[in-house]
Length: 459
Image (cartoon, rainbow, N blue to C red; front, side):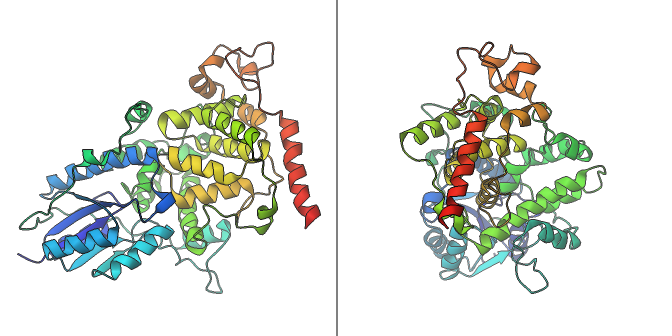
């Protein structure tokens, strides 16, 4: 028997188009291992919704590995300690893994490389983050030229086939039981809506992709309509690496119509990784210095408003529908994410990082790069962002994008209202069970603009 090779898995939980597994399988027996490391990320440990998804994705991957004659080893602790111990136990001389670009994973890769022979492969993005450079040899800070340059390099590589067989080691090392990790919620079990909506794992990802291929040509027309929802629903599968962006690209590239808009969204995902590669603290620190001087609301009033926003009780139906959808399913329609984020930042004048943290805990697709970049875009604080003074009007957005049916689904106390009334119920038709607005649109807008003007005046 050859010396076994360890495959260190993180957000790359698939067998198809998985370069680390393919390379390891070509060398001999493979020991696939997932390390639950809550120490290295520190305050960026996975939130509750992500942990629910992880449980089911790991179970799915273990089943797929067993079909190939292998299995998944589960260990808990700091990655460098666990992998060093595992290599010593098994005699493995190499560890193969995919590159990750979150700051804590980059630190972990450096630490692991000091104790084992670590081989890193590319495979989670259309192009390796940091490789798309401008004419001066520097990374792009603005999305549009980044996407133009990235698109010139497309299509991506042809996806790798999954190994026909994965050789097992002579003796398997000990493994934790997945159930003992307590990743699933209990007392209460709040994951019923997520179970109804999602099938985590590679097979679930393939089904989502297959369904989206039929709709991809109409993406531009349907993606902004919450009641229709022509989005792909691939974001959590891409985040956990249950499908690669190259697989998604090749599956839909010839769909015609407005599929190019979707391909640009895959490019945005790459762009976000390039941003956090340049600015590792992007998830907690505004990129524009002016925002350090913005007087965000704090204190009891702001705390009460933040909780109302989190619970979907702001008095703005489109915002509340989105926040309730998020809590129930671990996901929110993209257009509504923009509306809900803008409302928190501009109407309530609450620091964008509070919203970013809430999404981090409640989204099944809580991705550090995408979440950070999208929140800073909404706030106007990012390296490429809309201006702070551009304030979304949630009531007109709701009507413009025909969200009546969406609101009825997620805010049932408004279900009996007409299409004309449901976007902004007047006091005469607003049910008693539904709250009054936390702030009127004009008042919230003027307060936000005044806060912004305060920066300009004081500077």
